[in-house]
Length: 282
Image 1 (cartoon, one colour):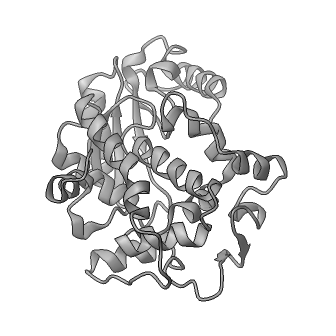
Image 2 (image 1 turned 180 degrees about the vertical axis):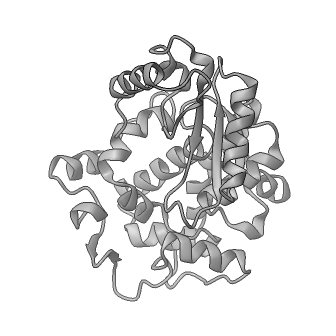
């Protein structure tokens, strides 16, 4: 997980060693640029260039403008992202920026469902059937449960508390894919799920590209009515909030960013377009 003091120390050293015209860029996924920049004599040099894993496969890169970021620094950072054949998404500095800010509440709601007794496989199947490339519980396991706890409060909103089962798993050292067990057991890099569960077996990238090609697979088992809507509701609300707060310039950019950054069901046109067309609250 990210350590603010370590980043401050690193960037202070980089500023002292780098050429005066060098751009200082951070790949932070959850820290505000303003908090890192307090260690710099010239905070205008700092910009965010936030990639998404796996970097070779996911095209989106958030280019993050802090309160002090110089316009020329921002232009150079955007140009760099284009030169490496990525899609730059301009965002303003805020916890989680756009993509992680919408993923945090989404994953938290999925874990709350599990806390209430709904099987992880059922939650994941509901969202894969909707059109997501990977279920949210499997995504948490993939990210790492310790990372989820460390970043969760900042990304999920004020008053959000980690689910008890999540804290228990972390306390036991069951951190998800990297430790071999979390909400799922992991064998050879794949989540082992319940009998007959096929809907959520696709990996994040394979599932995303399959759906971008217009192919969808239904859930392999019945899921409770309204389950997908419940888990998606915090994501829709967070996306609208990012537009309202100016984290991203407009709804079109927000929709594109969430599609390419999270794999949000491309056939919907993005979360805000989906909200508008279906009348779902955002």
